[in-house]
Image 1 (cartoon, rainbow over the protein chains, first blue to last red):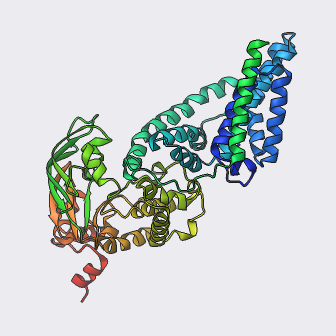
Image 2 (image 1 turned 90 degrees about the horizontal axis):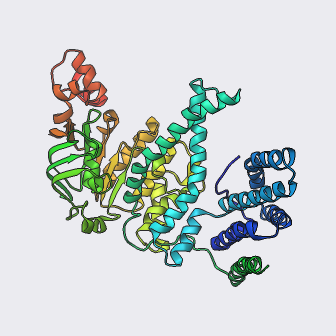
Image 3 (image 1 turned 180 degrees about the horizontal axis):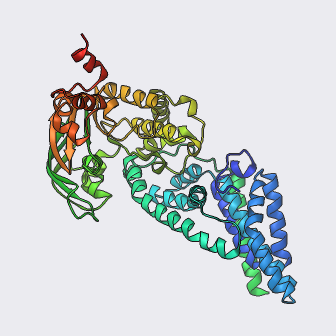
Length: 236
Length: 272
């Protein structure tokens, strides 16, 4: 299970980063405004189709791994101990749709291209970098957690077995993860300064993405669909 | 002199004593200076202060005068003036990754791009820097998949691609194998022809082969400053554990100072 950008040549990789982000934002809104349960279900199915077509289908497995516990709890609460399976399907589909689109965005948007796109729109480098660093923090923390897990296992930590044993193993994993990340902040700040990130000069976009007319139209259409759905929900 | 420190004291925000005490030093182009000392002597801090990152980024309190490339590099005005003209290589390459590059070529280009250079100039600088440190074969690799040594060379390329006038190298061979370390040290005299090169390391055995001047620090103070033989060939340097293995062997064998620092120097002295 790998989070973060993966090089590729699919349609989402080739698309302008703003288009992929617009898709993600649209899905996040539509998942909670479309009629339930059919709307979120169709939305999730549509995203699965997009992921396969865009050759980022590996993200579906990751999304499944993240969504599975939610589905289990939803089925327990609303189906086994309750009588509202529609509610389970609705909430489950909403969570799945948001997860899939978020992971697709992480996998398909090259952080450097996103920064270049933002710089071309006049966004200051430090703002663009902050946005990208936030997106990158997920895979970065995942990599770090994996290394800490290996190190603690070498030192005899048991991460399998009873539920209580697993809960106890969280502390020796979480504490170094958080403290290590905080401890590196100073080093990273020094490195960024040393590499001219705070020079105050206008950074040169290395690979500015081409913003085609079709993509601009697509983004407006996505915005229109969001506004239209919200208006329809208010009126209906 | 491109870097001049006069009566500099510096204390970290959480420190209960000064990391640098009354340091007065000057560095110029044409020489490779080794700054060394025991752990906590203040070698890394000296580089941070010379680059202006202490106290600008690290916080803390500094007194005395620091002039790098004609300005105080920690002042707001100075920061803009020295941006890209001081190259600082930190000892932990993985914390220096830009986080927005998925090939080594992009990573090396991060610094030059921040300086607003035209794309063709960036391309030439990146190719030149990668050739200089011998990492052309890594150009399309994801930096996150590299070994520590490879990554350290990528970071060195990233710094040299910015063509800085002052190169401050903090343990640049910490992650490198012996051959990689030798290769990096061999670059320094050539770089020092036009740049000011200051090297902070405890890898004295290899560094001593290329440096022309040594500054010995102890608990934040300069205790010796001179040629490698004058500084490292002394009883004091060997007793501090800051000299070379050869010097230590010769001292333990009962010979008197000055001690030879390299195998070649020892052969010259003892071989009949």
